[in-house]
Length: 405
Image (tube, rainbow, N blue to C red; front, side, top):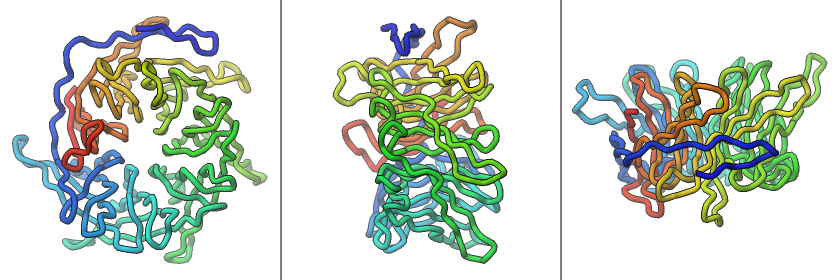
């Protein structure tokens, strides 16, 4: 493996574990319209009793607008999981729920739609469970208007205090370079207020966020943009809320990606111990040896100083390594679990070094096809994720899988 030099700092390389990754267990294979979803881009979340919830960007009904589904675990391990299609967006409600869902109060599910017949700019929806046996009820909470409003969200939502939901849109805003927004249910029943917290200009401040935001201390939000930044390879940004005197949210670019091996993040971030941020970049498609990386960004040693960037692992082969990582998840003991779009494995793990200055250790955990969302750590300790088919071909509409690591 090569050593990489970024920002004048030599970075540790990683040794991959030997052997071929074993295939993950497929717990549901999507069959597509008219009775099932197809091609899940978002991941899965756990609800009560180990039930999984997720969405597919297509399939479901004659329109193929996508579905929201649940997967109920079997009472005996050898039995199959049971899928239920909870919601097919109706014509006019919207299409393409790309993102991972979040679970709100009383078991309600919240998510985003990329577009739709009555709003080609997408929307935010809620899905409410039945009081007893019956149908779930879908409701469009907000329809984006496009410039100067947000447009076409590809990411999920972040629950905030007082019922606020934070999110990003990949387009729209003042310069059509995307936004960070919040929506808030008001005191009037059925009324939802949307506020644009920041409109990206598409230049040094970043542009076109594809991933969600995460929360840090003091209500600060962190996220990534796929484009923009100092070299137009994307950036990591911070949004600080206004103080007690009011005012606007303040954006600050914490790190601008410089190209190989760090370019074009499409997922969000996770916050680790001591406020360290972890994330992944997708890589440069035209490069024969740049297939993205996993990085960390540590808070400054002194207030007001620069954040400290480290390259944890650079992916340099789509034949023997995972390639084009789409997001990371933090597990116990600081282990990073990742999902990848291509390469020899779609699920990998990076174990931190025992001592400072040593290398992180990579393990390839399984090959399930092309993933576009981070894996979820289940209550049983296994990893759960989604695939929309094998790289280069959409096979059988994708799947939900489980990896024992």
